[in-house]
Length: 423
Image (cartoon, rainbow, N blue to C red; front, side):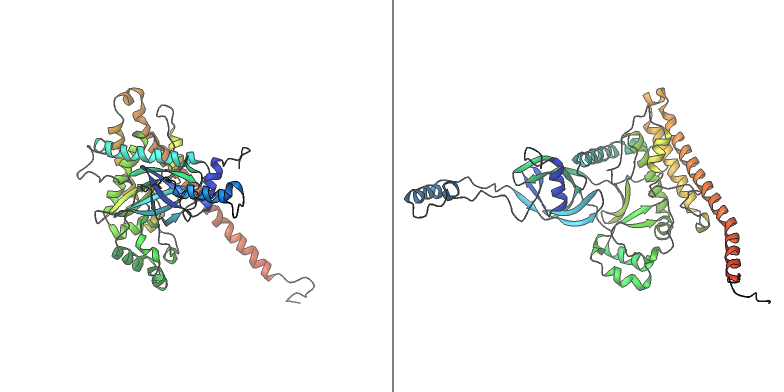
């Protein structure tokens, strides 16, 4: 509580994060109720609450009759309340599904006490949604036929404010957006039989979240050792070798789409693309690539941005394709050369789309050099990391025989106070 006795913004958000709540709607505004078990109602009081106990008092009886007979304001019959079903929770947000009529939507509620973080995410989300629709055709005319399919982004709808016992506030709590349809059940079950260890398949198939399977794309990594023992279902990582085995040439189509997407994020939205996620779900009953997760994205100025800043925002995200010498990619485990081909498709579509987007005043100011400088810096950074990792492995191999010899000598040394074996 503040010194004035009023609840602060941070406390409101903290209460939201720690309490059960429901999504309400009134006059076109969505809000989160702090305590949905106690819906808003007219205050219940009697004259005794004001005057104290007046049992047997004729005056009290007359006043109470007046109160009971007087017309009372009617409750707001237009207010609606929607049940929230938890989908996934992260350090930054809680994500729920809710039903509006026959359609399913998503409500994303921020965990951060600073409501500006969620407001900034919604601003980026709305900008990316509009710019992708506006610029996709302009960014792809010079790409081969067929033109890469446009990335799908959940349509943002309404912001959500926080409601306390005292009424609606202006505190930003989250926003609603379209629901990303999961994979078809037969696709999800088929992947379980392919990717999961036989001894764990029954356990995974009984998981109630099997109806919510969406794959989180990892174009920059091969599946790690022991991955078949993972029972994760919601947003399960799908690595490039797994995608190639199951989807074949579609991997290159997705890489082209991701290249155009990054170009529009950079030069159409002026966003660094930090932390974005790519999910495989469905659209119109077919497998489709979606993009979401704009809470870490930051705007930049084309005139002052550096290649290093864009590289720093992207290099840690395994969703994007990486060159064959990337640290997380071992060429020996890629006999078909998919990693190299995916990177070629991605980088080519990025450069072509960037050239189409950067024209006119950008050419006069020299901004058209940014995309190629960015890719060169990205490749050189990956190459440097690979060389450092190789030197580390070499040093480890050189030290290992000496360490093993030391242990063998230690194991064969005569204990103190014992006679020599030959004596």
